[in-house]
Length: 371
Ligand SMILES: Cc1ncc(COP(=O)(O)O)c(C=O)c1O
Image 1 (cartoon, protein in one colour):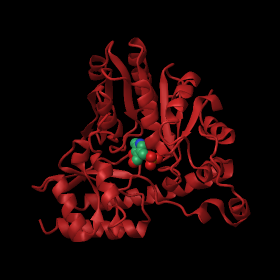
Image 2: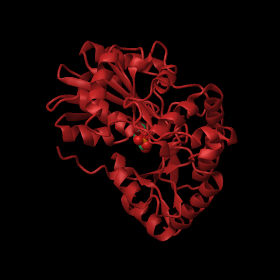
Image 3: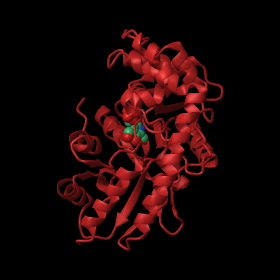
């Protein structure tokens, strides 16, 4: 199997730790271990033995994750190395060469490339910007026409990366009904749950259809990408299959990450982390939207969730060229829209510390005003 390059991750992997200002990330500013565990947790951390941990995640971790979803038990959970591995293992386990997959686009393009590499036919289901309505929309009738007897899976990202839009419960039920009609799976990457601007949690797909897979991780909402810890939530027999496929990849997550993940989900700590995320994202989005609104050559649909904003510009330059000029001339990294099939747009991450974000926006402005 040969997978096409994952353009956005190649771009980020190559440059994100080299530039002075990185606004290409889609999560909130990462926490330090000290912020996460506080002084009280240090002795426990010091005595942690770096074992091969239970390879599907320890029972307390799986129970803590299952506790986030109504009706789920630890048998519905497998811990993975980040959301990326969760997506990979789940899709690799379920989708076979020759299957059809319908995928919401734009999206985090991992499954797009990976499933094409597996030999599946991946059909885009468009999520379109509507500046007048101030939201993104997709056509359910179009989905209905794309899904058929050969469809193995429908892939969504909700809240969506890069749009920052949210599918509500009614829309999810409609997708579930379309999938049920053709006995197809629905995989929903819910990694941005908990980043909603209005504070009301995005409805989960879990429980709406028998064949549902949810993927998620600690990387975005929790500000802990360095843990490389994520999870798959699925029916118990599918989780057992995923676990056995996982043996061939990374075996299991790191033991320290496993235990820090349990810590992050414990009631009081989780509440504290989510509060930090909300405060940062609310403040930073207001600031970023005001900055966009002040430039007549830019426009953006105010995201409902996520830690990034898609911004359309009217300069005569491709988004890759513009992003490259910002990198070379301003030592700053953004994601060009054409990595999502949306040339003429840029994705700006606003989850960083506010002073870094402000400096970054000022640098983008410096370049744009020379056009
Ligand atoms: C929608 C989505 N899923 C998965 C991932 C990968 O997550 P992780 O860093 O937890 O592997 C990302 C990272 O940007 C993402 O945006």
